[in-house]
Length: 437
Ligand SMILES: NC(=O)C1=CN([C@@H]2O[C@H](COP(=O)(O)OP(=O)(O)OC[C@H]3O[C@@H](n4cnc5c(N)ncnc54)[C@H](O)[C@@H]3O)[C@@H](O)[C@H]2O)C=CC1
Ligand SMILES: N[C@@H](CC=O)C(=O)O
Ligand code: NA
Image (cartoon, rainbow, N blue to C red):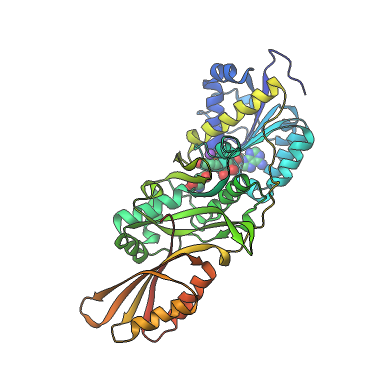
């Protein structure tokens, strides 16, 4: 629908929690600047919440704007901001908003990673925009740089720390040497981890973000179900110590890369803990910060760093999107729609190519090193370095630390199984992929 010069744009906000309340406040406090940048005033016409009567002193709007009827609200807006989260009713409300001609800004990674194509198809059918910069790495501008700034380049790899809660936990384990459960409890006490931190620590949140990043970077539909996912619950203090001895830190990484499988181009998308050399830029990402490292053919290496969560940082990304879609409403036209033309296959984890760092507790006697080396050779895995340490007070026991060259994850997993069944190996004490080296 053409925008009438001078008329305000009607903005509907769905949800008024951590992100929604910051968005509402900034829409009010920065109204004049936003109007100048967007080309029209952004007028809040309603805020859908579950309990409209609840006092919200931190949200400086007329209390009459709060409504429990989100379905009605989305029918009378030019721009709908969805910050409810979850799959339904968020999906139904977004589709309804688009059917009534509204452009949509969302922060909802779970929904985008599960059903992005349906949202994009509907946006295209009704000629409206769908923007969701806040859904990945919060405040960090990363989706628009991939989608627009790098549209002329060829992205090869996107590797990021995209979950602040897990980065806080792993960083604290590195600094204090404490165990996993103890550190999660500390993160909860400080308000970083949620009461139910499952989506973060089991890697679901990072997997959704990885699916979104891979879809945009490789012009291919990738959903959360395509992403290999391992969380951080199995990371032990021994793993962190092993990383430190190897001059590495442990990070939960989202890795999206182009690979060649059976002679054809494909993509690999995975989320798992990995050792990262302390010299790599991602190793210096501390506490609850996020960062995304992008490698592309012409630009080379790029790094994006900042706050991945929190009301104001996330609202910054939401409002950037609101201004973008508002400009399109004022000038006519739309922003970029879905780009999935490459339609590359997504390979399973076994075909991903990585390196492993393995610590073994072994018997210190002739022939043990040869047996261990044979287990690697039998599976076609080449050893890069091997180091033996005596175990203090245990004359006949030793620790072997092996770092491999790059090999398929399937071959590396089979090697680890074979090592575990050798008589000379008492324990496979730590196994971790190595990335960024
Ligand atoms: N909190 C953060 O730091 C970040 C959040 N996000 C995303 O932003 C979205 C919102 O997150 P938060 O603000 O943290 O969640 P929240 O739980 O603080 O707020 C959600 C709000 O939506 C309301 N709501 C739920 N169902 C509703 C319904 N049917 N109708 C109307 N209102 C309803 C809830 O009452 C609540 O006020 C989620 O998709 C989340 O993944 C993205 C990046 C960072
Ligand atoms: N729970 C997420 C924040 C939102 O994306 C995190 O810990 O990073
Ligand atoms: Na972002």
